[in-house]
Image (cartoon, helix red, strand yellow):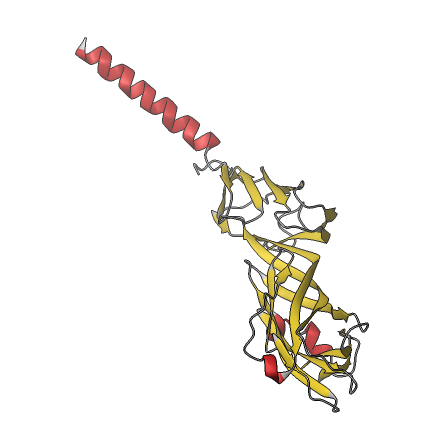
Length: 292
């Protein structure tokens, strides 16, 4: 009886070993919390000439649409692994939607074991809407407290202003106040390109003008784009990847006056291209006749 039990255990071990070797390597990952994707690679160990399926499910976890979404496989030896040469153009993924991008990769013949660690780069265009309030007041009411609101749509960046909470009127003179607009990378990738930053403010109140600029770019209008004078920095990934701090100048008309506190709202949009990497993990390709 003891010998029979040992035989059964040995047989079970052999079955587990064989099936583990054949079916091993299938892996599903979700990345970090809020990563916006799931990834299934099947198998991660394959005999030369076999096929690997990379099944990526992109999720829009943000408030607004992800537009012009493109997923591209990088890190594969050129000319040896076929099926992932061209980017997959997905288009628009609306908020809350999931969309698949699937590669079927044929592995090459090889006489030695090969290990590859490809990466998927995902890029998309996104627009973050933002607004903030500013209080316009005479100096006599400098100590008065008011409630000012500010917000931005959820996405891969944050937007905040500094220095524009209060604007004090100078009677009879034009009043201009400069503050900072802080656009900060807040997700897992980088800002690739800033297509436009614009602000909009009603001139029906006490504000007569508002302008935005960054470095030597802009500063004389309500928007900046890469095509503007000295604005090519908005396409420099090294400079803008983690965000930028621009300058907003608000001007009051020389005739503006008030004996109360007026609240005015500045609205804006930041339009940009954002890219992030998804690690595929380690894939092993073994020669024919060898055990992976």
